[in-house]
Image 1 (spheres, rainbow, N blue to C red):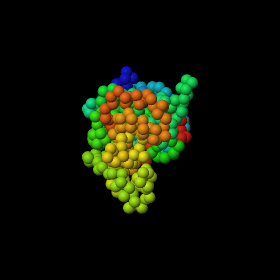
Image 2: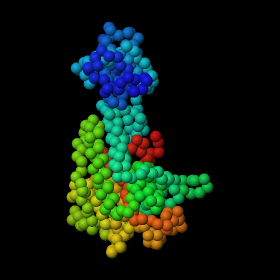
Image 3: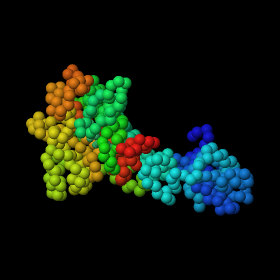
Image 4: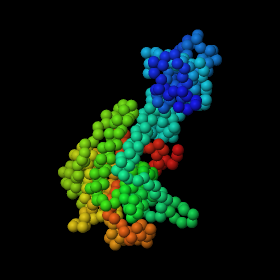
Length: 434
Ligand code: AMO
């Protein structure tokens, strides 16, 4: 606890009756009934009711309290009094009240959740939005998700790495790059740690993971795309696509379990009944998925990606997490390994939630010649990939990996509609601040 406060609101219990506490936080509500004034103080843990009875309170203190603007920051010291009718069964009878920071009025948005606010208003004042219990609950769950991811991957002997975000080459064909000025040269914001995690496989580290920003200059304005997202990436040596799919499904199971055990109040606040998905996830071949899409009346040409509608139709047919495997080589990036026995198909997969794609991955090409050939075949200039290709010339083991979208994992887990609701300060086509 800080030197300023002795307790969080939720750390005080009725059986502390008579003891002196100091609580600190925001003025959530003031109810001035004339002879009695209730101040509801809010901190990150919850609410504390501060009760001031006019006749028994110092007149200056009483006057200060009833004049407080909502959302001002205060420090209150006083005695705990068990009170059945108060929230949490106690109230604080103040001996002192310090106004540490006065809030302007009116507020840009309501904090008490009595009045709804649209997403833009909330994002424009994100620091206030975060004072709402539901918003705080989402980001507390996000913290636990990432913690569970780290714990799981570390228990699987992955080493955390950080690769450059300012890069010289594109990794994911098809999605646009953000160019930046790097001294007198052109550079880009990285779309994926793909090339670096592969280079690291030539180092003998064997298993790496990275949780970091990826930048996609995609122009679409949807509820599941951001221009800056957080990707959870792994790469593992001496592994094929099935090995890393198995790691991925166990990771999902373990994250759901961790959240269901450690975020009970947050899930209750959000009205989410979390069930841990059953393993193993179904493996659905691309060709089978095409059949499902066709029988649901969606036109998909072999070799094309599934559109949103077809993807939804397949998702509702399957009804739970599943892997879409064995994609046509033509729609996957150059680093994806084709099957030796039929090069039209690749050793690739997407992890799907019925609502959307969560992750994609593959076994990679580890032969220098084949990789160079594939880069050329996709119309890219191999000279730009020299720093990457070099790692394939001096001993590169077979390897596989995946990238999982943190935001999509959380939004599907918590039934959140808009991806912007699970990022503190989202970046989309229109939004560059705050
Ligand atoms: P991919 O491009 O499929 O694969 O990205 C992996 C996952 O990252 C998330 N994601 C996004 N989330 C929000 N907004 C976006 N614009 C966005 N773009 C991607 C998705 C997606 O499934 N290098 C490969 C991974 C690999 O093979 O290891 C890659 O980047 O959840």
